[in-house]
Length: 259
Image (cartoon, rainbow, N blue to C red; front, side, top):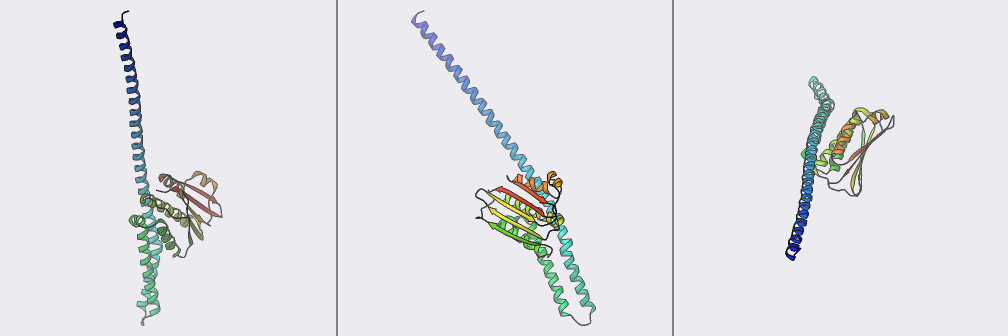
């Protein structure tokens, strides 16, 4: 074999080798690209699923909030205004103006107006977003305490950290639902709420001294709004833990990262 033939064979071998390498590189690139595209599609689907879950959760929370507001207006504000009406009727039936009853009627109307304003504030998501979560929670607890039915307390530990507006609204609605469950089912005398600002997460404990519920209900995580509370905590990247002892009370712990 002459020198020219050897060079042709060598060049051909090098060309074939480069071709194989090029095909391999292109194949690896295509595999990588397909995986990247698949990852992007999966992330887009996860984001789409998250947005749908968030929308559904917001609609459910809105409906529950409206039901709660309707109940409060009927039970609390309605009773106060009924009392004011009775007081005014008494005044109208008297020959002489009874200033003491008139003052009581004015106080009843003022209390009804205050309760209506507080209810409107708790319903307004824009207001929830504009206020610190601690403040809007304290406001909600004070409003409940004014009914005289139950005592509330609020405590914070650690240095407060910022939460996204979306997350803040969902956490507040979770707190509202937990409190409403206590008012409707627990027959408790006290509600204690503790915000613990840990280095990498916020922990919220909501505790009552009511009648609690059975292990079967707790294990099923159904009824009493437990499933909603846990689903919504999961929706914001956190989780909720519920513990209850019959005739001793219930505690709900919500843990969520910041951001």
